[in-house]
Structures are given as C-alpha cells and as structure tokens.
Image 1: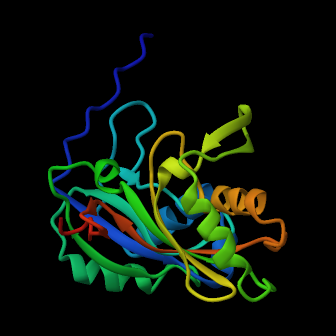
Image 2: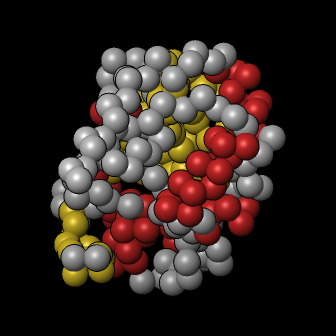
Length: 233
C-alpha cells in the first residue's frame, strides 16, 4: 500500500512577534529547553497555532538570536504563526499566566515584512565582573579601544575558533568598577560578551577570572548610535 502524501497546511493567518525575558534561575535554561517550555505554554494558553506541512507538522515558531546559556536577558524575541487572529496584548497576558518563572513576555506586535533575523543586528549588554579592583576595568576598556583588531579563541561544537572581537564592538565603557556597558553587532561569526571579556583579560591581567554575569538589555536594528525596537522598526 502506497504511503499517502503529507497534508499541506495553509499559511498563517497572522504572525506575531514577542519580546520576552530570561531572569533569575531562567538564565541557566538552554535555548532548546526554553523551546519546549514555550510549546507547552502555547498549548496551555490555547493559542491557535499554525503548523508546518509534512509528515510531522510542527507549530510555526521562529526564534531570534538567543542569549547564551547562563546569560540573563530583557530582550529575547520569537515569532509565532497563528491560524486565527489574536489580540497581541491578550496573548501576552495569557502566556504570562502559564510560562515558567523567569520567562515574562513584555510586549507583542504584528510582524513586519523584514525578517526577525535581519532586524536583530545589534545588542546592548551589561557585563558585571564581581571583585574587580577600582579602576581596572577602565584601564582594560581604554586599551581595548586603542586596538583596531583583537583576536580571541573559543571552543565551539566544530572545534577551536578564532574571533576578531574588536570589529564587532560598536561601543564599550566602564560604568563602574565592576560593570561594563557593551554595544555589539550580531555578525558572523557571532562574537559573544564573554569573548569581549577574554579580550579584556589579554590586555589587562588584573581583570577578574570569575564567570562574568551577563545581561542583555536591548536587541534590535542599529539606527545611528542606538539599538532600536525591532517590534516597531
């Protein structure tokens, strides 16, 4: 008996983009585990999801550039394809009733023509290095800004990779003795905030060796010198 062809699903009636947080212990949740938690929340909130075609249909969910595991964030993004129109703010309220602790949907809006990936081209980060001696981070940042190129190495799933971190940094400054503000481009290969910390340690050995506390504060298109809102570009 021949196998029946897969059912072709209709395209989404509406696409909504959501901004959500990773706070507290949620910062240690992997991107894959969050995906599972979101799908459970969508089912519990009875969100009318559209599905992909094929023999194993999946809900139409597209993720933006995810913060690394162990990093907190106030600006993660996801796009949902729906088979019925929904009020964005009612969807926000429904999901916040059922999402795990630490994940909070802050905003939602209808998708624009530009892809989510194209809009998420830059990020603002807070890098907290506890125990740094007074003035050390300011010295390290000043040395960083003097360089036109600065290469670091990081182990990836494909082996050891080298990155020029300087080219990805739009702005960096020492906010206090323990905190750095970073604005970086999300280019390929992706330079992460911990790569920048590795570069600072190359330049200034007194930068603390402990795990930095990373928080993404904003993510979106770089317009002039600011990271703009990708939900309403």
